[in-house]
Image (cartoon, rainbow over all chains, first blue to last red; front, side):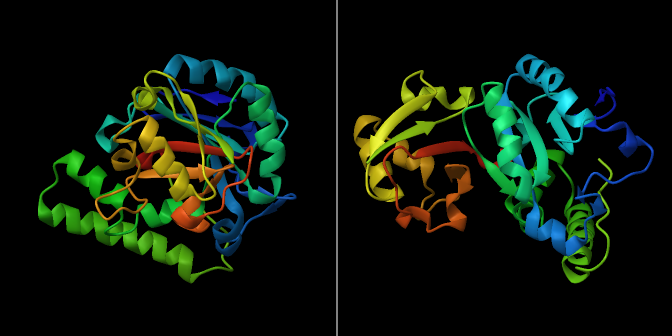
Length: 173
Length: 90
């Protein structure tokens, strides 16, 4: 199911059950813990123009519906504020299934393989992390707001890192 | 060792309008040196001021090379390198 809400900067592809409250960070039918997400969860990256990613999303939607791919999101517009001139599609899956997911992407003509783990992503958004700092600079925040954002990001990520046995909860976007 | 290097469309200018190039070398560092001969200045695009990977993301057969051995990562014939802007990884 493609969720294209103009109020969101992302377009999402979820299984309908996710809209009913089910998690998409699931492995073999079981919700993943924070520790499992940090160890196994990640995404294949696909960069391209928005219309090309729209076409790819249509092709991938059946694989999301049949649960071969847990979740996909992609940019509505290029994240120029972060220094990226193309839209980015993130095809999420468990590392243990990523080869199967890659075969699906390759079958639709994707050539460049780029796998980024959830742990790497969190490191980019930690206080002082390159992406968090670049994003805040693009928002023109004052220093007090930046400090508050850093504190919030640090607290959220620390919670995941410090509670490996807890069921992972996805962040609202 | 012949290696294919791929970049997204927005970086095609790096390879004179192509999203693909090839290079040779036993390590990633050697590949970048060889690329810099063919495409002068590409080393400065790929590496930061300290000569390290950091300004962009480089993947060897899909794996982020910073999680391998960085510039010392061994390259084999037929390997594929992918290069994307750092922020695309987040």
